[in-house]
Image (cartoon, rainbow, N blue to C red; front, side, top):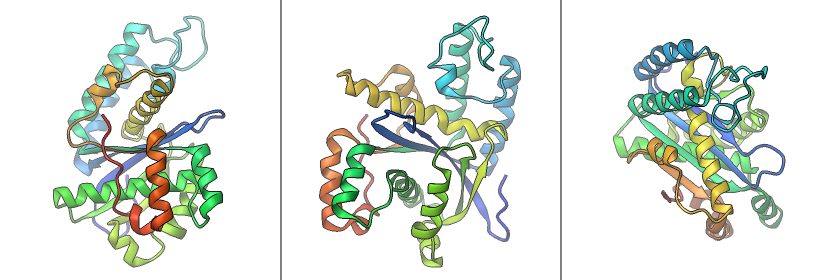
Length: 268
């Protein structure tokens, strides 16, 4: 799927967002890294599932969060509750089998924006999370000894795609040295119907956002579907809720130097 020119882009990262709607407190970004071979296998396996359930793409908030309306006109309304459950289980199984690495990050957007006003010279909340994606992929590369380049893909319909492109090329990888540091190969916007692999991070961003919704209501612990999705090699850099004070401490000391190597840790 990449247009990498002369670069040997051996791994592909697909990103998605959650919490961009009005009234959302927590902003989340998540991603999955695939080898090119496993991305192709994911596409082949999930196309069979999509055909079976007569869907054009996977969208967790509509499939898992919406209510089944037998007479509705939505593209997923023909799915019964058992269908939706089977579809989600198949999607999770295929993600777990084919993705090399799953990762995500969260931040309380209103509190982060207040921090920007106090300290200045900081990216938007969306730009901050995009930076965290590169940091987490770099951590995976160090841990596994991966030395190749990485191609990044973001759904073209993403609300903050303009912010992502501007922040990426003007602050994160604007020099050859930074491209090398992050093993950055390319960045491309893709349509959600291009291939099933584009939809892969949607389920992680959705469940991670819902996890924080549950925390806000005093419900501790992850839902079973989130627990089933996460694997030992996956990593979440959580800067939301009580971690916001830790984030502000790092920002006050030296934002870029401190956060370039910080991942926030896994909280599940």
